[in-house]
Image: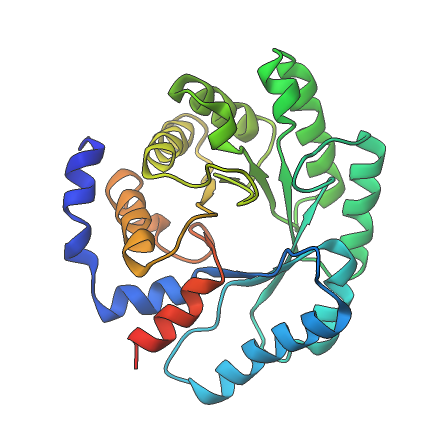
Length: 266
């Protein structure tokens, strides 16, 4: 397997219009602000509706991602077929509340229209050595989601600090039932990094070879340029292979990238 430096060196080979279109179709168009309101989310959704009318040459984003209380708003105003409604749940971004609160919030989000759920791994429990407690929470959250609502587990890799912790957390989440593993909330000082992505993709590959189950990957936070996204695309391509290069298994947690790509794609 190529090392990370070799992979990053190949990223420029993927700087093409076709890859940029693919990246646009893998975006989780996200609004997770303390200032979000019903009116702002309606306007947010309307941008996506307008893109579908004005840019038929582009794929639609993979999802719209909002807080659970806005799932019903997205469901009501979204006019584009095929876009998933993703909600962060379980006391995002800290994951610091009672498990009962997390499961109720998740169930309500799904009732209101969420078709995908993202939860933050309880990092404090993990770092204090309570791996069973972390596992139990993920299992419980996946049970609420059921087989039809994918669960993304956010590892908050910037807080995990070491490659060993990122690797351990990746396998813990997948073994507990995660359908995706995601780098970060975007709310901490350190968000997605190529180093964390490389480790996580290696873990996904090892897990697939052992369990024959494909787990998705989502970098999020700090994706500020097209080249940032292309680097993550290249890591997935080189480590996991072409069969992960679809928007069911590869997602990008970013909103600013959508505007950048629209401009670059003309």
